[in-house]
Image 1 (spheres, helix red, strand yellow):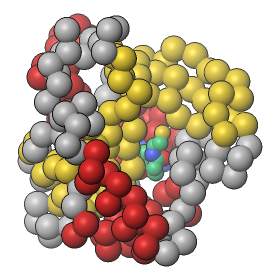
Image 2 (tube, protein in one colour):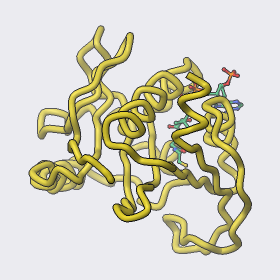
Image 3 (cartoon, helix red, strand yellow):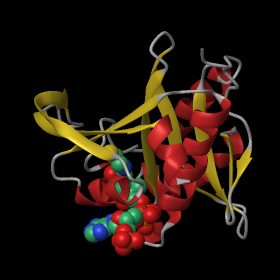
Length: 188
Ligand SMILES: CC(C)(COP(=O)(O)OP(=O)(O)OC[C@H]1O[C@@H](n2cnc3c(N)ncnc32)[C@H](O)[C@@H]1OP(=O)(O)O)[C@@H](O)C(=O)NCCC(=O)NCCS
């Protein structure tokens, strides 16, 4: 059985993972939501103005009342700035699985940040909430995400054709991965 905990505050060496607040609006807009390169392979389009970001975060703030809602801001301990997000979605309570999604601002790419953050979220999701399986999918051309998943020991399961509309409304193929609690604990 799952033991839901909601978006609990977590910590890694360099980051605090915590719920978003409206104070993150400027960071989210500047660091990632307004950048077409960051959203290139995501399902949501770039934010054209900061009120869009403000609206999105206001909606999230209400959702945090639900302890089955998992959506963390990644706060850099040193600067205090929010540099990205990571979330668990498509929760399946009965089968104890869910999907993971993540993004960070471009200037933070390739410094091992998401590897550090993803490990902490996996630890929480497997040992605290008791998920048995976590999936991830990526746009077929999203090489960075594939490298990250490989590094974090996700197993490639196959490609689903035209499974998703991208943020331009085009159907795209996606590669699917998963990691099991048993594998994760052995790895750890
Ligand atoms: C995908 C993303 C989260 C990766 O985050 P990151 O912090 O840069 O990843 P890391 O630095 O932890 O890298 C993990 C591994 O992937 C590799 N990697 C990351 N980006 C890469 C790239 N563009 N090309 C080759 N390797 C890459 C790293 O080298 C590292 O492997 P290594 O340690 O063996 O060298 C980031 O690129 C991003 O936010 N992209 C935009 C949003 C997005 O696409 N989200 C995913 C949707 S499925």
